[in-house]
Image (cartoon, rainbow, N blue to C red):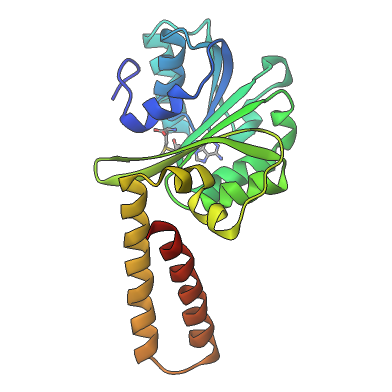
Length: 231
Ligand code: SAM
């Protein structure tokens, strides 16, 4: 992967960035995504934010090597603290982290989202946390994609401002992903169901405590909910 050729995962994130967007890529690491977006003429300007020194320095180097210092500003900052009001960012991308970490980044500096109309979030795990945050904070899912790369499954969630209503199953699995029910989606959730059933079997063999019984019931509800969707 480099700034010209992204991974399939980051290419999917890039595909949802509107032409002419002013992008903040948070947790940018090597800054491949913002460099790609500007090179392709998709983003007009970008901010690359990184909290860790090593990846920050690698982002600075990458932007220099690509000759993009006039279009991409690299800032070392915690999450959305990388965004300044004068940047007038309209699109935020956060990729390659867990859902709860992405949510904590969105929650820590909410004022940085003032000018933002689109969030493109790519959680490696626990996308549910993002859907819960979106419901509470008046963001609506515009699109969702699930993909597999190098044996790992990733989700990309595209949010715009607005309200939505989701069932418990939709919060966990994703309303658009349920509607599409792609083979990757069915395989991912079949694996989850099998894992939960294995834990249930272990609980059945273990001591009968209130905690174990509560866990068993919780898993039984999850299994039923997911099986209803994928079968
Ligand atoms: N976004 C790139 C991608 O998807 O390939 C890099 C993903 S990398 C696994 C996660 C990056 O996020 C790391 O470079 C890490 O230092 C950075 N990161 C984690 N928490 C952060 C935060 N609160 N603010 C900014 N960057 C953060």
